[in-house]
Image (cartoon, rainbow, N blue to C red; front, side, top):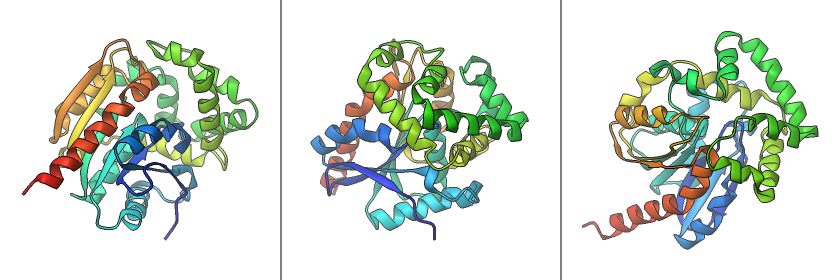
Length: 281
């Protein structure tokens, strides 16, 4: 069975929480959960999906992640946090694990493009359309992005954030955030661009029909100014997921600013679920 590299943050032996990084993204972005994980006795585990063999696609890919999680946490209940396109992967792995996930927390989540005309409002429209209609050309673009990430990560960062909105502007002005994001981009493409491309190509295919079977208790956090994953995506996911119990719209926030703002809230929410389970007769 393929093994997946992972990073671990938070408490050394706490309640296991699986964080699904964005695309492009890497476990480096999970560092923001470290302090809050320690506060709430959570062990935050993030698998580096770029280390999974590119030959694994579709169900086999999601099953591989599910198997690694099961090997890591054993019989313990597990909670998921999915960010951006990582939310799509989290949902698919939830579907594979069938009842073994206690709660799902979606932040700046990307919804299925076959559900509505979301793509027209997304800043990544051109990339998504290329992945949909000309995947071989998209793969060439991904290789160029990988080359930039290894040699000129600052330039790639500026290109990706060219249409930055809301509080993401303030984040981009912060040197610490820029350093973290450049590290994230380097890690994302450190082997090749195939892992990144696999996630994007899978995401742009139809997957709306998979949502009706995902009954996990779900909470959604989304920035009102998000132009990477437009707010309409959160509204759709809230209506399409049978287990959605809460949606929180964050005024003035966009994509990454929502992740940073909700990190303590998400950890506190998971800790509350654990506490409730302990006192339940």
